Length: 214
Image (cartoon, rainbow, N blue to C red; front, side, top):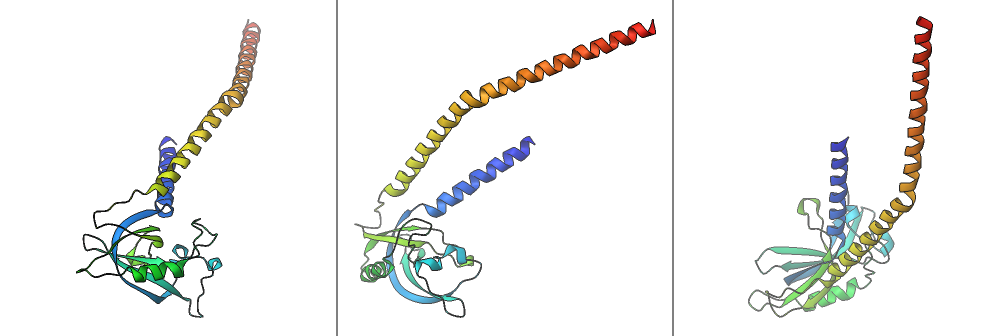
């Protein structure tokens, strides 16, 4: 049971980490090389794309017209983003300006010979074999490839989550001390009394049996 509990705790921590890693915003310095729309087939990876409640439209074949932004990192590795609205649906980025963001990305395109570096704020993962792309949320020009803007949004969210966790822990500790502790003491006292009564009955029974044998 001890090992099962440790495994469950480990799985819970892993799920929380994956949830935060996917949902929290990240920032990367890249160079935009292309912007375009593409009909994309959605299947098992549908959960990693915008919900239809945000206004996303699919054709009869289950394809969706999605905006994409191709970029290149300073080390030369490609990084592809999708550009979809999130609306009021999770994650709560309340993004309704994907058209404007696409226009900004198109305007900031550059070549390797004359690069223009930008910081792209996004959430999500890039998993090539599942055709999953991070969703771009904002694009900000930066001075150069070595620029590394502080991801203050993620830090603020983590700080708030840590504060809430600490508050919950304090409330739980007080609840245990004021409510569960006394209740458990009463249960323990009743159990001790019951064990004592059983012991007295056993002693009485043994005494009666001893007298009968005589």
